[in-house]
Length: 172
Image (tube, rainbow, N blue to C red; front, side):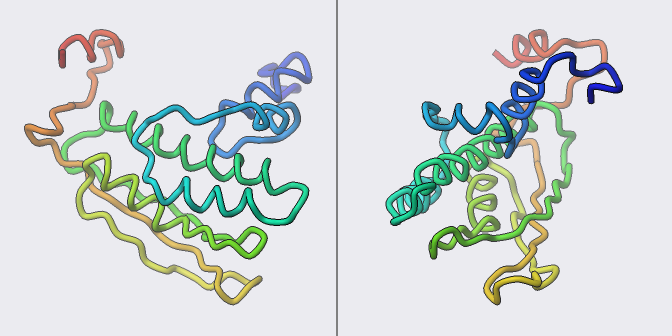
């Protein structure tokens, strides 16, 4: 990133990583200690699992629980923001793996499916695509959903010449 001119200073890398979904390298890791999730409709089971991770007997449990929470929080925001951009019947497809941290199972596919359903996506499903090579309970999943415009979901894709502000004003 430095060689291509996207970053000029080391702190820029930490800032970029903080803004990325799942990014917690460098200074982004220390930001997790004070970060808290704002209410955004994230499914309750995500908070429950993060609380279990944070209460385990490990010196890194607290920061890891925040990392997990921030990942799903950011994914939920991502799914919510897509609704303004997607065409009718657009199909979303994500490849994700479930995890375990300190003996606590983190069912990624269930969390993402719940988030998509909460946000009004249709035909939400997850299929196992492969067994991972580490622990026996870990798999990779294909999580998919369809966005259908309805009266409850009236967003339409922006035309190239429209700004996001113009798009939102049209909906209000």
